[in-house]
Image (tube, rainbow, N blue to C red; front, side):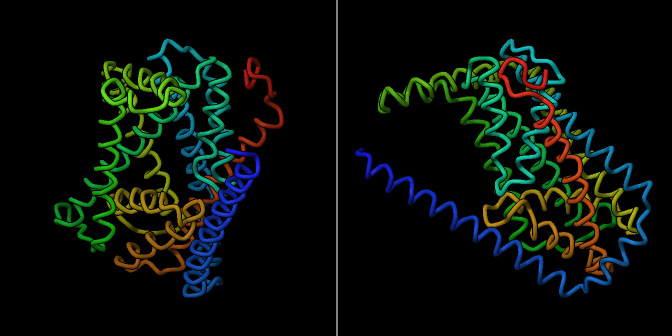
Amino acid sequence: MSAPETEVAASAQRSQRNLLLAIRFFVSGGLLTYLIWQANPANIWAAWQRANPWLIGLAILLQMLCIALSALKWGVLLRAHNQQQPYRWLLGTYLVGQFANNFLPTSVGGDAIRIVQLGRRINSYAQSSASVFMERLTGFLALSLIANVALLFTSTNLFGARLVTDPTLTLLALGFALVAILAVVVSFASPWLLGHFGRYLPKAVRNPLQKIADAFGIYATDRRTMLKAMGLSLLFHLLWISLHYICGRALHIDAPLLLFALMVPLTDIVGLAPIFFNNLGARDLVFTLYLNQIGIATSTALALAFTAFSIRLLVSSLGGLVILFGGRGKSSHFS
């Protein structure tokens, strides 16, 4: 490809990214503006004024614990490749990734940062990519498991908390679970797949893919590591749900924990759609749909969504401090 053609292709990619970013801002901003207008900002502010600050503080601690658990899980996955990384470095790098995810217009920028930082540190972008991907994937599996179990309980009235869920949300949760399972199967089978079909790929593509496939193959045979990772993923999402429940109690929302076990995972699943910016709008809509069913005002539902989001931003902003004071060298970064 000639230089002019390369420039044209790069320009087209930038235009597509800018268009997608504009769509995300329009969808999230438009939906959020509509919900706030419907609820009346004065009512949202009144709900905040009644919040219990001690419970908000507890929720902040839970958010910090969630990030600490994620960094711990990343380290568990790396040890399967005999990569022993200091926990302090893992936590610092994870915080930087969270900072990028929450303050940049993307949901994968933080993962890219972690891959690059770790790849430089261990001189293996294949192992780095595999560890970050598997860290994400186990989280998606746990998320879909909790969402579908909660859907089963709330749709059958097994615990006296029957809720109406739009069929689209139900199909989305089921589809997300199937995609996550398929991704695990393909990842574990990638060495076999590449061995049988890799000859059809150009050598320049096949060689790096082979390294990544080999890295995934190690996870496929290390059941202990995968069980630990799944256990930490489930614990993470249970804490994340509990954080929202505590925020709800801080705002005097009298709702069963099971409702949060359904509402929060569904929110995270819907928010993965590329039409939303940082889950804004999706979170607020899902919270409103479910809390309205038990008599909670839209203003209070939005106050809950804003509170949880603010806590997430507050804790992830620590990543900015790591960037400022953590150093930049590949060998000394955050160590």
